Amino acid sequence: MPDPGVLGRAYRMAAAGGSDHPPEEVWERLACDELSADEREAVLDHVTCCEECGQTYRALRLLRSEACAFDPGAPAPELKVVDIPRPVPRRFAVGGLAALAAAALMLFFLPTTGDFGVQDSGQPGVEVLRSGSAAVRPVPIAPIGRVETVESGFSWRAATPPETYFVELLNSDGEHLWKSPETASTSIDWPSSVSPAAGRYYWRVTALPAEGGERTASTLVAFDLVR
Amino acid sequence: MSQPSQSLADPGFEQLARRYARLIRSVATRVAGGEAATLAEDVEQRVMLALWQQVSREQEIRHPASYVYRAAVRETVRVLRQERRRREIDAVAAEASSEGRKNPEELLEMREMGNRIQAIIAELPPERRRAVRAHLAGFAVREIMEMYDWSYNRARNLVGRGVRDLRRRLEAGGIGA
Image (cartoon, rainbow over all chains, first blue to last red; front, side, top):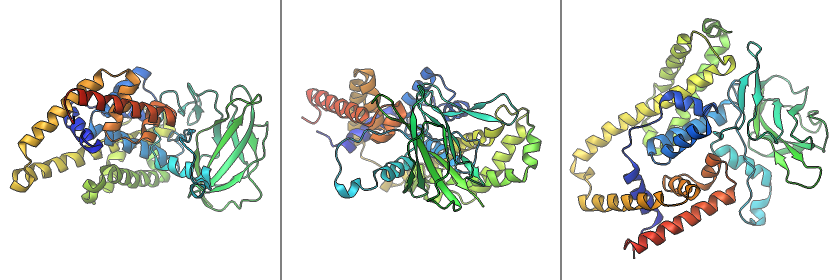
């Protein structure tokens, strides 16, 4: 039986040659979560048959995942809650969240239809986060993007139904800095144990179900604290 | 509604465009791997100029806070396309040399196997088909998971079962038996 590399090369050779690459306008709408489910599926079908468009897809995921660190107008990247496939050796399990975050940050974050993005709030120059099919998750509101202060702490839009929450804060290397106590509020102060030094941080909020269901984590969002 | 000229006059615009230009060059280099080692030195300047031109052309900005991001998305697509064209020209030149020429029998064999793979994949159930296509196209399980909004285990199982089906049918057809 041919090895996996040969199967892949043979597949790509047979799949190559299509010229119906998505136009720029479609890539733009994909990157801004504006494609319908059918349109998105058609693009992904092409992406998995066309090496060229596979590269473009990867590049746009990277662009999105990193742009939000300096452009508040870029859509937020998304952290999927990964169900770990098998127990890991203890030495790799240490700092599990940090590893998860680091791995997720290295991946590409172009979200699926209905995931988080930005939309016009109806007020000039003001945009609000929206969520589609993932409405049950809490949605980080602030801090996101470039901020000059963290005095107002963390705030998020409630999950449905309302839950209790905890916040996790990571540094630019994906190392866990702080996990908040549980709260029923949709905001919490910056931790006194973490000095708000300039630099990049990541955070997310996790909703804890009242009756023992699955916890749901928000997207992992980035912000740059500038002084 | 914001006018582009106001945004371009904003001293923050140049800094934002410059960061996007650096990021676009960086992602283009990363996705193209070693092939992009020679990514043109002037790509950042070209991207800066292109972003400025794109934003200048906008008569009405529908999403004021994200229009530079949108322009950057388009520019990323263009940069990658330009780089691919440049590499294709290089590849044609290499092919013309005797060292670049491949064994035609080997090529034919690969193409036939590829066609057979395509035919088998087309008969798989939809989700398994998507998973196998993405896997053979070189996407990792975690990327496939993100792409189709599946859990990790679901993506891994769909890939595993799909590839197993593919191998069985290839063997049944006399390939690799």
